[in-house]
Amino acid sequence: MISLSDLCKVIGAKLIGANNAPVDSSITITGFAELEDATANQIAFLSNKKYLSQLKNTQANAVILEEDFLANCPVTALVVSDAYLAFAQATHFFSYRPSSVQEQKIHPKSYIDESVVLPKNVQVDAGAVIEEGCCIGDGTVIRANAVLSKNVILGEHCYIDINASILHDCVIGNHCVIGPGSVIGSEGFGTAWDKQKNTWCSIHHQGKVVIGDNVEIGANNAIDRGTIKDTIIESGVRMDNLIMMAHNSFIGQDTALAGQVGMAGQTTIGKRVKVAGQVGFAGHMEIADDSILMGKSMVTGSIKEKGVYAGYPHQKIELWRREVAMHRRQLKQLYLDRKK
Image (tube, rainbow, N blue to C red):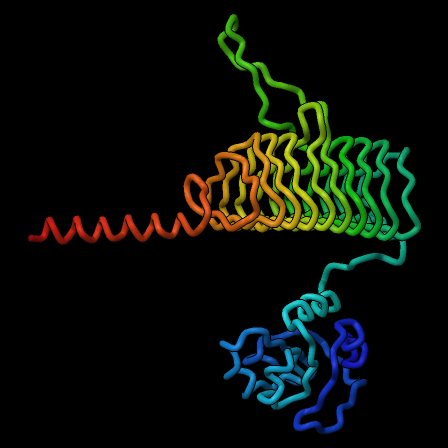
């Protein structure tokens, strides 16, 4: 819960009453709701004009919006320059997930090796395992059945969700989130063919995974350790659910990857790259900073120039669109020819 006045300070909003009426800024907001579902003491937001009709009938106590929509708002408005960003910032006050803990809460059914010195403010839930040599920062939460293998370094104010596993020697920065079921530091898919024995010989990977600050990794991600060098995720990265990141890969600062992205080994993705769902990377390639990759693209080689890319194999989106249009015209003509 948070008062309207405090919320305005956090998101940098200007508080304006309906028809410029006075506003009681001490009113407590209990949570978010959709414009059409909101009730008293709830707040909603509007960032898309498609939902303007819902704004006119909303029963929310207040609405986060941009100045262009203010004239249509029948309730108190929190006016900001970017409503979607303000919404994102405001949700932090209504999350079940604490960003930090202010006490030491250790469940008796957790296992913590005697070599581990826990900070003053930390939460370790039932079934969690912390093996020898681990170092954990202040304010961190380790949820039920999460595992920290030997010599893991975990920064301050992190949140390790249920059933997540961080394997030996991996390093994670401050303010990071590891989603439920994700595995950080698994062995990569490295094998060599033994001609004499006519079978595979597995490579035991010597590297680790190194993650920067303020990184959020979704549920059921698999991030492999490096073969010799480390697998690296720089600060500010966002990774959706069900992402595979293979050995020795690299993700640059503030890049975002949507669900089911697959990266083969030695893939280097630059800074601020946006990768849509189900994009595949063939490996041993570099992706330029600020590139955008559309959904289901197959990236078969390096992208040296920033731009928007799509298709299988990938190409600049203008070429891909022309190619798709050409194929449709050809298919239509073939259908008409056969119909004659």
